[in-house]
Length: 265
Image 1 (cartoon, one colour):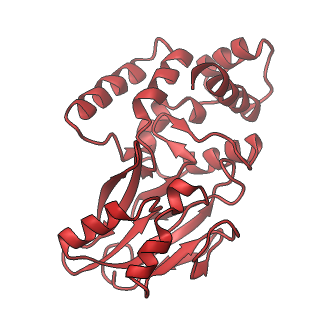
Image 2 (image 1 turned 120 degrees about the vertical axis):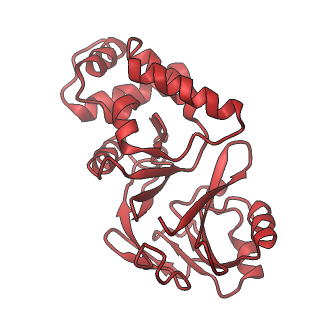
Image 3 (image 1 turned 60 degrees about the horizontal axis):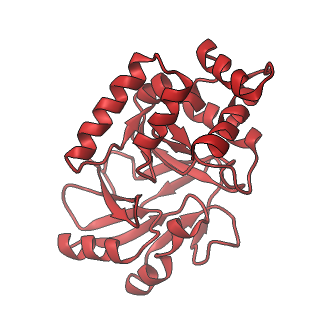
C-alpha cells in the first residue's frame, strides 16, 4: 500500500486519520474535530494540508475546520450536503469520486468513492478506496454509532451495505470504543471464541499504548453483533431483550441498538 494512513489522537477517544504518501509533502485528514493535533503533526513532519474529508456534522468531527482553513487557505474540503457543516468547498453524495490533488500515483488512483451511510445522522457519508473505508461514526470496531437525526432503519441498511464490501476492507473508525463495544458483544454472545480472542487482542494493544484500529470487515463480521443480525445466537439474544419474536434483521438490529443504549452505554 503506497498510501500511508496514520491516526492522530484527539479529545479523549477520537481519531483523526492522516493520509500521506511515503514521499512528498501532500496530505489529507479525515474528520478534524480539533485543529491543534493536526497542526502539530503536520508541522513536525513537514506536510502540507491539501484536502479534508468530512463524514458528518458533529462537532468532534468538524471543530478544527475553520482554523485549518485559515492556515491552509487552498485546502479542499469535501463533505455531505448539510448546512451544519461550514466551509465545504465541494459537496459530495453517494457514488461521487473524490480526487485528491497532490496524491497522483498514491495507489488510490488519487480518488475515493463516496458511500451514503445514513443513520447515525441523516447525511452521514463514508469514503472508500484502496481497500480502506473511512466510516466516521457509522461503524465502530465491534459496534456502531447511536441513532441521532437518522433512523434505525437507515443505520441497519447502512451497516448491511458496509458488510457487503470485501472482507479485507480496513475500517478506519473515528473512535477508540473497541473494548467497551466488545464488552457488549460478549453480553450478546457470551460463548463466542471470536469475541474472547478479540478482547484479548484489544487489551494487549491498549496496554502497549496502540490503537485497536483499523479493524477489517472479516474481523467485524465475526464479532460485531450489529453485523451479525442473521445469526441465530444474536437473534435469540435480541429477542430475550425485546421480550418478543423479531421479524428480520432490521428489527434485530433495532433491538440490539436499544439494548446497548438503555442497558450498557
